[in-house]
Image 1 (tube, one colour):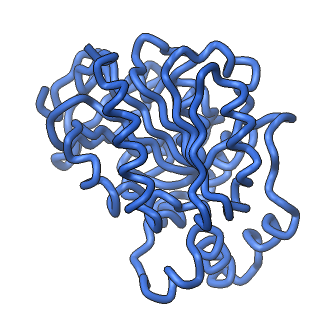
Image 2 (image 1 turned 90 degrees about the vertical axis):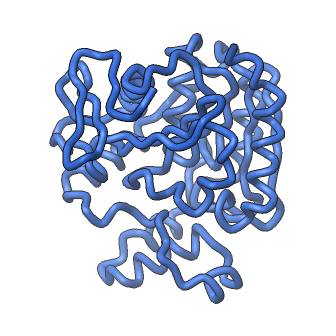
Image 3 (image 1 turned 60 degrees about the horizontal axis):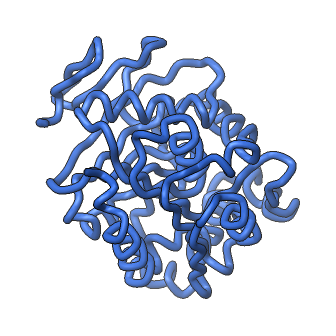
Length: 279
């Protein structure tokens, strides 16, 4: 179905950008590329769809579907509470807009938290599930250290930005990749939307729902990730029935970009094995 087509009540384009309108009246901008089995890509907290730009071509055999979270990019930015479960409902709305009933779902960071709810609340819509650098949240999740927290709230904005980059990528990679970097947050976000995103991610707790996830699941995490500690990966793998765990040695939070030559083939191999479930 061409972008801009829609199976929900309200949809259209704004400045040529396709959007759909959710049940609570929020316009969500979405992007569709390619043909093949549908694959939803969900980015991290306070980021728009450009998070995936450096690696999106790796998934060219799929119809890749992204959208800008409410609060980011070209989507509306209401100053109301956001939740990861609510974001999962937004994913379903975007699938409706594109005319896709069932898709693979690959979520990283907060996108992985949202993907857990997509699989739990909308099981008929998920073929294969990939959860990258994410956490079950709540009291069972492993939180980042106080030192990491302090590095992110420095009054010097450039120092705080540098801290984020160093949590995302290794020093060696940063030395040879000056940017642009699309994982450090959407600069167009208003302050209220940033606060709402932070609260949504911090409030995530899917622990009780994880055992009910029926989709074949791959858990991916970098061993050197302290932004979302790697100890969360085995928690998810043990909690989701039949989940497969793959760790990428030496990778930090943005493993999917810096270690794309390892990560993308790993995900593609997994998805190829479960693609018949989309039929």
